[in-house]
Length: 325
Ligand code: NAD
Image (cartoon, rainbow, N blue to C red; front, side, top):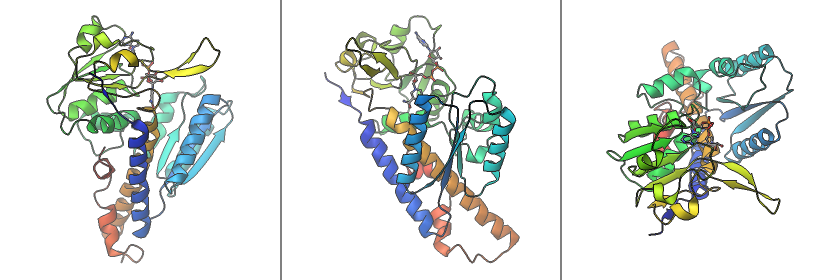
């Protein structure tokens, strides 16, 4: 059996197209252009590449991009002050702080300072708690959101399937498990201290691996016909001196056993930024809906928003359904 390859590049392009269409609809409804602020602290070369990509893709879907580059020695106070200004800025609908931050800055304090309604990374404790308590109409971490879209490209309905998430980080593994649970899978989480990992993997209809351990999962660990999502990305040096990106799953073996599988690169990677854009659109819609509600409550005649604006922004943070993630 040779698995179907899940084309993350193509599905991410589809998500970006849906976001661009959503932006056009908002503008046609007289709503402000959605804006994403990206804050980069320091000179980490990989972070610079990620941020440049985010800026480029944000502009490509018709959104405004606000980039803030801060020196590595910036104080936590100054960073928090910038976040406070972005929270108060109506042109900014999403705020993303690129990690990792320098050691003298408390990442948790920074995450908690971002307005939950602009928290397009979905890491603010309020949003984490909302997702954990089954409230899905909230900003949700981008990589798990992207993985759900990839899984749904294979399965119409995953209710009742057994899912194993290998990796329990706050960025990927835990929110991933919550989304799968919400989709009514029977979910287990494995981590570095889990015993008998291979046997647990062999039970899973859906196997999501996010450990950063290259080649951890072998073909023999996979249930025949399973859907395998490889989130891991590690840059490895080749004997030729060139570097290559590898995943946590041994692709050449796994592709012979799985029913569907993501490659690395070209699987989960492109979905993360696409879902960041989807979250920003969602935040902009919710902000527009809230502004409209305020006007209704203040009983101010709505001169700027034509009637159909209501339809276009109604449902608040509805992009999770309209962009069908
Ligand atoms: P992390 O280091 O925060 O967490 C790793 C998790 O894997 C931990 O829960 C740990 O217990 C578990 N783990 C480690 N070794 C294990 C083992 N031998 N067996 C079972 N579990 C083990 O990492 P993270 O931030 O969750 O990222 C994981 C991987 O996903 C990395 O390769 C990262 O680069 C990649 N990633 C990709 C994207 C993307 O957009 N594609 C986004 C985020 C992370």
